[in-house]
Length: 347
Image (cartoon, rainbow, N blue to C red; front, side, top):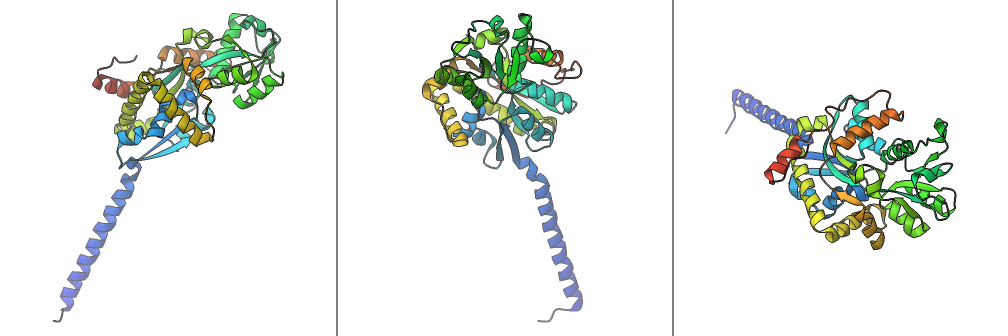
């Protein structure tokens, strides 16, 4: 059977049309692809307990569904995580309050705190023989914090203020030294540091391995322990474009918080499994037990403490002006999740 020239033309047109439809479909799929991915950052730290457990046992993947790809990123410092969030490299992050405040100010409001993760969990320890029994005794001493401008640094300066003490860089008598947590242990053992304000589990590790003494326990450092140590943040872009995924993440976050609090032994085992996966080392069980006693796992962001951290960051020169944090905390999605679970809302 012969096909006429006109028929061949019609067939060619139909083939091209079908090809264009196929390509258009591919283009739409490519456009939709970002909605199928959620990028999340966190630290291999005990204070990021929900992230550790949720990635360890698959809770987050189950909550989001198999059609959603979760990209997991780990960080060792708040500023680098904030940079990643503002650059669009992650959508959600677990982080300390001070980096969250700094990122909010730097970006002029392009991120939001959407939940809490942990409270307290920091201790002031002193090397044996340093003669430090109280904050007053830090006069003339060398005191370490993990990073200038971080949560422990702000807390230490607040404690010193109450005793009319100041950092030596401001003309005072206390030498505040930023040192990475593992190095703090080494320097205390060598006698090159007198004290340190550190997050857990480093407080418990230093007590066990260096024979250090606890000067202030977690509930004594500030606000009777009712201050946030780790939070959940999200880019405003993610909140605008993927609110459903963010809400599902918060559903899992609340579920994990309750599960860890109801089954601490199971929670600690999952946390340690994930830490070993990320760092190739487990936290000794006695250290983990001690550290967990000083930590409160929560989804409440402790908004009042965030405001105070903002004020203190300005007072101590880490922010150029008093920050307006009015829109920093956005718990709308969290409270929707809590209401659906029959739990009381947070402020």
